[in-house]
Image (cartoon, rainbow over all chains, first blue to last red; front, side, top):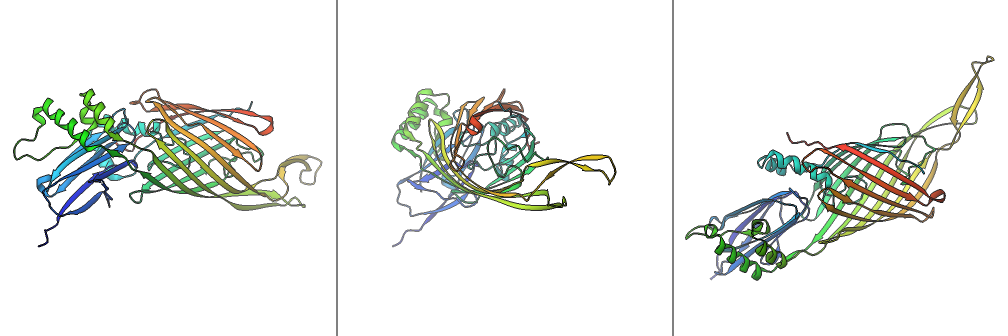
Length: 92
Length: 348
């Protein structure tokens, strides 16, 4: 029996060149700020990580918009350290 | 000592992506203003002088006067993929420079109207130790029970910026991040058009236009601690007008005389190769450095430049700085440039 695939949608708004996001260690490639990733649910935990370096004041938004049970929005503006990194755990 | 005076009448930074502009409007006007200003200060990869081959995606505009030359520069940068960026600079001379005066940077296209197109590639692969991040997250939730996900609530993310008020946790989280180096590569193509007027053997004036061009390849690395280091290679084919001569000629066949300045002979074709090393570092919020060392093998000339960007206040629109330079040409010449400008924002 084949498990149904769940699509996870990750969106990002960041003008910075130096923005990267990974899910389970694999880089997310965005198209027009959005990426659709297929997962076979196994009950395990998944990890979304992101990194940004740019000038102080640069704002960015990273969102998980689908599926609804793991929806998340993280919005921030860089401080004088000019960098940020974040992590988000979720189960499907 | 030759003195160069550079007055930058306007210099701004504003991000190219409309989506971000819209998002910025939702934040706060003071942040928007500071954001636009700091775009000029730039992080290590920013290039307020619009002279480096590698630049961040942005929209910039600059007016510059240098000795007898006045120039307008405009830059438009766009992201065209996850790792690819494109930009185009338009550079227009605004006055007739004396063709016999060569700018200290020996740019063969400095007297031409130039379209300068660049494509950039970026590679960056940061990492985060998820186990340490988990420990930090759990400790954060213990200290901030209200942040904990209630039963049925969605899970929450954590980031460095959320740990601003928890220095020990921020330090642990920061230690878990392996920022790594970011690698840049760029290729540029410049095409310039310049008009020349010269006299033939019968003193008849002839006007012509010549197309200069240049190709540039650049590569660099942005380190987490020490800023950006890059090497730029440029090959130029350009045209130079011949030296002018003053002639005393009879005025309308009468006894009066007139003095006329004429250039005899068509413009000559020149080639130039340049290798340049540069470093960029935002030292503080108010000070950025961009030292450059260039060598022209054909002419055996060395050029050292040190642009120092100074900023009084991150929330005020004025900026300025000084460029010190030295060239080994003619036994050694020092140059000093001053640029002052008022940043402005496309945001209301």
